[in-house]
Structures are given as C-alpha cells and as structure tokens.
Image (tube, rainbow, N blue to C red; front, top):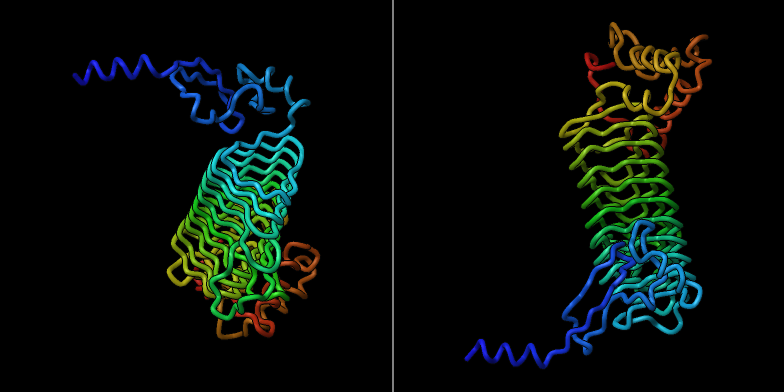
Length: 364
C-alpha cells in the first residue's frame, strides 16, 4: 500500500530540470525534483556572479548588465537600505533601514546587517554572520573584509558602565579576515570607539571587547581574548587561548605564547609567555620574517641584554640601564633600539600598567 501511494505522489509531483548557478557557493548544480512552489535559490536568469572557473560564469556575466544585483525573495530588505552595484544576497538574510552595502558585496544565507551600518565594497558575510545593532552610533567596515560563520560584529558592549541611549562606535579597516564565532563589540561611550585597522587575520572564536584599538597586519590565533581598552599595535602575533587584561598595550612585532595571561604591557619586539606572562626574550623569528636587518637584530639583542640581563642586577636600577643604552653611541643610532626604549618608557607613564615581569636568566 505504501509503495503504491509513493508511486502516485511521484506521478503527481512535476519534475523540472533546473540548472542553478550559485554565486555564493561558486559552482553550478542540478536539481531534478525541485517543486515549482518552492522559490529556487539562484537561477541563471537572475544571478550576476559566479567564480571564473564555473561552467555557467559566462551566462551570468551576460546577464550582469541587465540585472546587476541578486536579492533572494526570502530576504528581508528594508526599502530605505542603500544597496550598491553587483550585490548578491542569499536567502533568509536581513538588511536594515539604515544599512549601506558597497559594490560587489556578498551575503551568504542567514547573514544579517542591522542598525546604522556601512559596509564597504567587496565584503563577504558568511552564513549566520551578524553585523551591526539597533543602537545609537555607527558600525563601519571598509573594503574586502570577510566576516566568518556566525561571527557577531558591532553589537552592544558588555561593559556594565554603558548607559542605554549613548552612542557607540566600531570602525574596521580594509582587507581583514574575521573568522567564525568571533565577537567584536562597539565602544562603551560616545567619546571613544573600537578600532581595527587593515590586513588583520582574526581566527575563530576570538573576542575583541569595547574600546580596543587594533593596528595593522596582526595575527590573532583561535581564542585570543582581549578585554576592554586594550591597544595592539602592528605586526603582532598571538598564539591560541591567550587572555589580555584591560588597558594593556601589546607592542609592534611582539609575540604572545599560547595559553598566556597578559596582565601588563608587552614591549615592542619582545616575546612573552606564561600563566602570568613574562618576558622571554626578543621575537627573533618575527623580526626576521618582517625584514629586520642583521645589524638591527644584533643591536636589539645587545640592548635587551643590557637592560634585562645585567651581570649584576643590584648595581644599577632599571631606569639607569635604560639610560645607559640610550646614551650608547652605537646603539643610540639604531632606530629600532630607540623605538624599543620609547616603548619601555611609555609603559611606565601615568595610567599605564608597566611591563610584564622579566627574569635575568631569560633572553635571546
């Protein structure tokens, strides 16, 4: 009886051969049993995009001028939203009333953009990504950014001092890859903002809290957690599962070892590691990879030893050792050494946290 019923249902259900070119997945596929009552996801007559190696890329390019955007019928797009040219929006997305999408953006199924949010050209939102929030203030993303699966960007901070109704801001630069399940929060007050620069790789499950200021060309491995007001300069690298205390500064070209808890500043060019992170020498591999010359590295090593590894630590104070390196005729001419010295001095300025602890027997 069941077999007979299935046979009747199959005869009643029309079979339609549909070639589907999906710009959000980049390959053609066939559907031999699609029902006309179900909206098809990406038909070749409406899509302007496909990858260059797709079998149907030429067909899509041919229709691009006639229909420059693809917005799936199941998507909720507010009529006041501003959509650029060549935008592809998959099914079950949401685009709010104050949203601006740049040219060539792609929103995968189930991604959402809310609030006063501006997204630059050629950004990619993976499935489940959320950008922006219904809050006073603004979220701005530059061009060529990738927002990973279920990442949450530009939402309300978790600072209890935040007052509902205050404006809060997030500015993200260009060419950043923000991977799955990462959270990045807006500022906690209208006089500040959370800032992320350009060319950063932020791996899965990272957290960047309110009012952080992140520079350029940084790499944050999985589960890097930055508390509020943390400053990260340029070309830093964190290993996995590290925690940074609020108001700490991470200097340029530094490295934070896996599992570290950073509660004080990390000077430029250095490496820290530990449950309470301690200085463990210079980030030599990072310096080499970023084009520092042999002379610069040798000078930095000499300066580091003189400051952090004195023969008799009781004979001179920390400040005296820094001054001695500054006054050295040879070391004083090396820009990298002068920059490291300034980084050390800045860490002991008012409202700063000092530098991570160091051991005299550690070093490069």
